[in-house]
Image 1 (cartoon, rainbow, N blue to C red):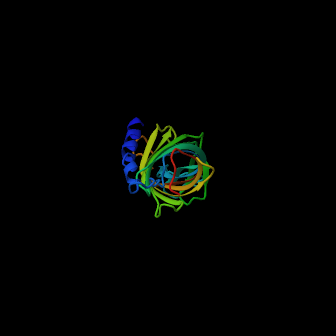
Image 2 (cartoon, rainbow, N blue to C red; image 1 turned 180 degrees about the horizontal axis):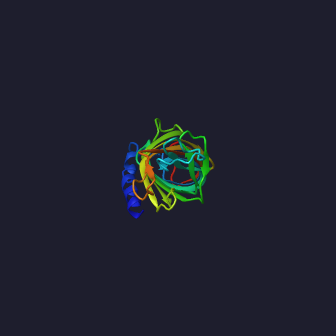
Image 3 (cartoon, rainbow, N blue to C red; image 1 turned 90 degrees about the horizontal axis):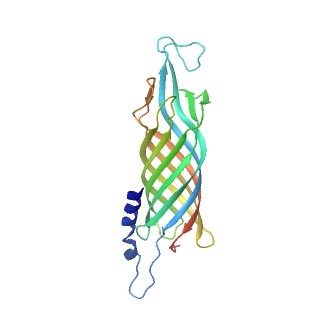
Length: 230
């Protein structure tokens, strides 16, 4: 985290020059000023693996079985969470943001056709970190977009007897900023994650999927440490 913080500060350093006007003019404030966000999330987790079992001897009373084998899909149920984000300006219309959130979803098992759904065993700890480049089409428009990368760590893993696992992937975001009484604001954001599930540590009957699609809706309170260009 210390290395990440130093990287963000190095990226943000040139903004002081880029936001200056002509001599004698006031500096132009960035549209992504330095800010700290505390936010609540509602998250939805995509399928992570397919379990194939009882091959050749399917249980006729198991709704997950056909005439040859039994298969279920492993994912996680929706869960609320919370987190914090740090935002720094890069230019008049761009910024960079690092964030960390925590949630506690339950593993979810369903048949391939999705008819049978079961929340399995206890909740797992889900920690997600992200680094995004933020930008606006126009500096004074409250709507913004984001692109970047993320990791998601499960402690323990979603499968029974699975050790801790870490997924990595890409992120896209779209959000809306609203100003309250300075120096406070509110941010509403929808964030989508295209993740690559961990390929190691799965029990023998489980095959991880190539990709998993996660998404979340977050509402956060912002504390601005410099004036914004709005």
